[in-house]
Length: 208
Image 1 (cartoon, rainbow, N blue to C red):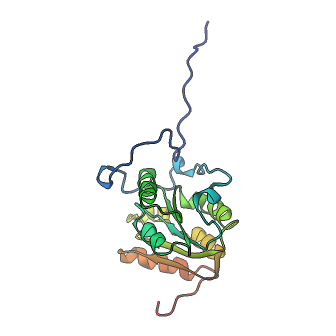
Image 2: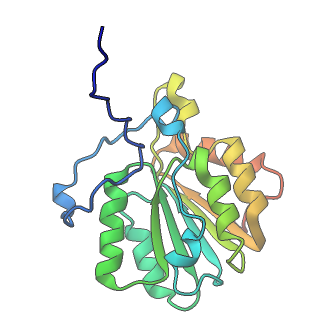
Image 3: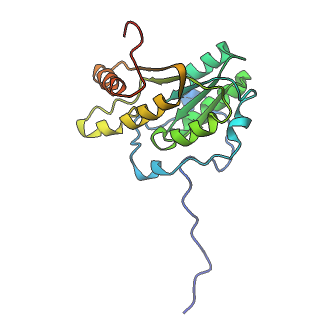
């Protein structure tokens, strides 16, 4: 018998970018609206170089703002533009095409205090924050805005702001830091409020 000389290629890493691609317009980027972060493919940790944080920002020692589920990055880009020289803004998003678009917009705007990572926050937030806070003055603000509601009862466990993630973020916040969460879905708002209320180290802001 003889063995075949051909070999199959390993499956691509879910966040890997094999070749640089032309910058796409927002209308050209098509992605799944809903992603199951518990699926096996999204349990693979993101690939990051050891010095990624120092290379991502011109002034890595600035306080950090983290936006979890940043989508196309509009909020991050606006905030980074308003806070140049004051804070670095890092956006996390599980859908890689949106991250590619956001980073392209950042480059076009010439923002050196903003960066986006394609990752599963439920899997990678601890590692990412560990790397970040080895450089940054502190985690000043975390935002979770209009997350995927995962309406079906059996899909509730897919929501991004789990007790585990909330606990991790609260533990990493600098003294006086804030965690801001909002949604346009009442059920999701109530769920996030319950999670945050039960998270040690967090207290409602005045009027909330």
